[in-house]
Length: 135
Image (tube, rainbow, N blue to C red; front, top):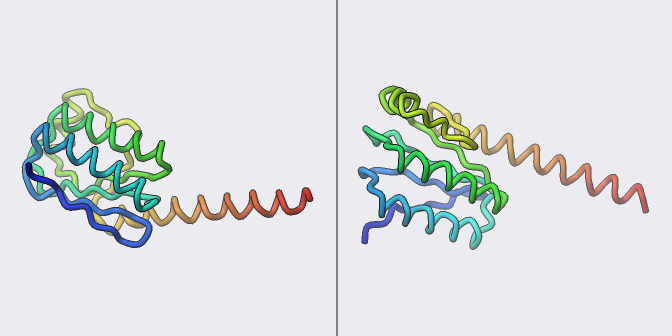
């Protein structure tokens, strides 16, 4: 069975979809990503869909499910490279891709992930400082 490669970039996982997504491939990607998030402790996932001409309702739902599963595993998901025709189709289908952050390109997507990681690190530091002050 085909698999979509998942690359690790520091605390993030990068997925570049270069083939048409069919349902089984999307489900395999979901399984592989959740496994990789758990195994690596990744804090973010960036999915590049710039090669996709079409995202149907099943693939859209799978992207939302991947983002939801990532959040449960403490990883944010950003989808980048969506073509205008794909965005129009998703809106016409009534899919909002709930819980998914989007960006125009990989560079902007990485900025979103880094900003989220920095905010989480600041919150952790604040919690530790508060806990230390309480002692």
